[in-house]
Image 1: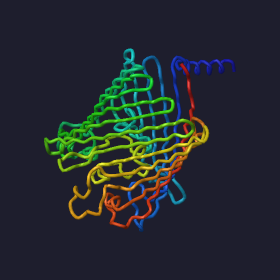
Image 2: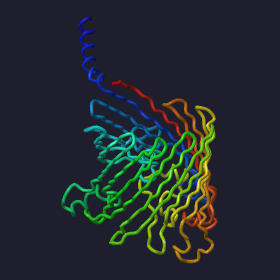
Image 3: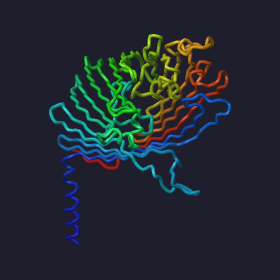
Image 4: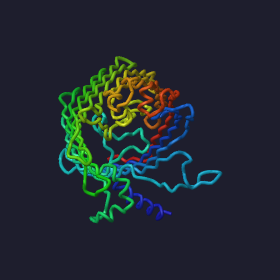
Length: 433
């Protein structure tokens, strides 16, 4: 018995002694979201029926830190309840969808304040207008990339580069026959960015960034069209007041042409919280196509749900017929106690260009007013591992909304959407350095 006890002790010592000199964390995320959809992203008509569904995101995360290296792996499974394609009449058996990798990277601190992070990773910068993890989406948004970063308290420098392989051969004809090639022909091939942040004081910072996306022509393996976005971000935060502002300028290379078009976006938001109540106001201006050939602003890989209403009516330039967007959104949030809070936001939408002039024809009845959306939310935080979120969106549509959504005039009905999301993040294991 003594020999057996000694043997077990030696084995456990062999396994866990290296961990005493490092940090190893295992945790998970289980997120279920129930939704009732009667007008999410699209206007309903009289024959439209409400859709009810539940989606689930399941993640298992492992993080290991030792010396100058940190590694992180996040295994992810996202699916709708009951969507499994291997089932019987009595229940679910299995699925051929399988698992996916949300993140898999390591970071090497090769010099003081310098690091190299490579692998699949999430990116989010400033207030996420151009580049964000888009976490509301159950799958989120990852990049296969490398990131070189320099970080100090008052200055940050990041250079990121992502690539999506669309072929594995120098033989173009063979590549075009490769079934892996087709889906990627219309998506990004390269994405690079340079981001600088300066802290002028404890309350105020400025960020400068340049984002360049290169899209592969679907008919070739070596022809690219570039979309570059230059950004200037201002951030002021005090105990009671928070102000964010952005200036974006975009240069877009038109396909099959050497010509470029311009686009821009301006955003401003302010929140004042003197007590348990927070008062906010925000305004966004996105340019649209005009008679001079300028392009509608492209939100690229930025957050949508967070800024443009929970019903996602105007998250792509085509949602407003390429006529741009103006969004003014007053909001209020009341913190009932440490666990409960409620919030309300109203979005008033307009196009930044005249729809009738753009499309021609007799659209004299149209105005730039796209209607508005009211979002109501409730948030319950049990502890740092468990929370409940309830969301309700109601859209006030008009004739211009119907035209933008390609619904016959006067045929739309009440658009409404609701969701309840439960998020649990248990921690299974942790060792400290």
